[in-house]
Length: 344
Image (tube, rainbow, N blue to C red; front, side):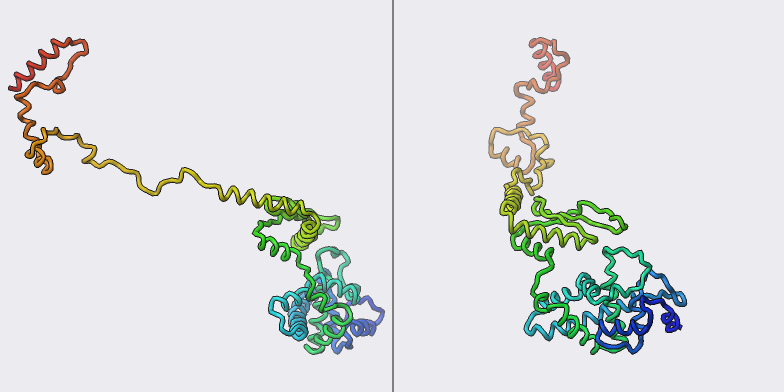
């Protein structure tokens, strides 16, 4: 059923043999089963289904993505003996990234063969790169892993890509900028300035690099990653050409460091506040005249013996309650004598 459906798809060729010739020109081999290649060129925008399942190149794209990683990883591993994992991974990623595959799809003529509804935005869709991966998936199903290896090694890397140049070329500007900032202990942020849509409805972003609160380069793109890469590239270029920008960044860093290193005064104590005990707040007992007995009684908590003797001594005006502030001295003394004789 699938073969019959795909066989009825209208292709941009007068005869099917032209598709065979086009596939041969791209891959270097004639197809054994043309249905795989037809499906690889069907974009999801055509919205065709077979028994409820969509017929497009997304599944072949998934398969081709895995095959490309394996094939290119194999080639890079064999070409660069002694290189570490980080170098090999970086080299492979530069070849299989969407931008590179998009360019290859244009150069190989794959983009012109894609079947779509014709209304797909030209920005940020990577339609050609996705079709390139799907075509690799079709080649794998039709001819096997060895054919994919030959296709990438003999036709792509030898004719279109310089593996040595790509492997040693630094294209990740954001990574390069962050690494420089880490070495110099500089804080770097990516600030979203605006987000809008272009005339075709594709989202567009504009990011600015901010280093130690100093605005640096800004860049636009049809993805956050693309715009941040552009902003990083412009910032790196400015840092190399504008010494005053470098000075401004380090001056801002110095001011921040100075503020962070200023001593902090009035540091709170970690000790608990002293609260007087009940014994300290209790009224003090009368003090004796310093005799040995009184000192001994005081240590044992006994009342002083002279407390009772004071009743026979001169009266104490502190024991007298003053009824009125208008009382005279004579009246106060008379009241005190009366109280003293009453107690006696």
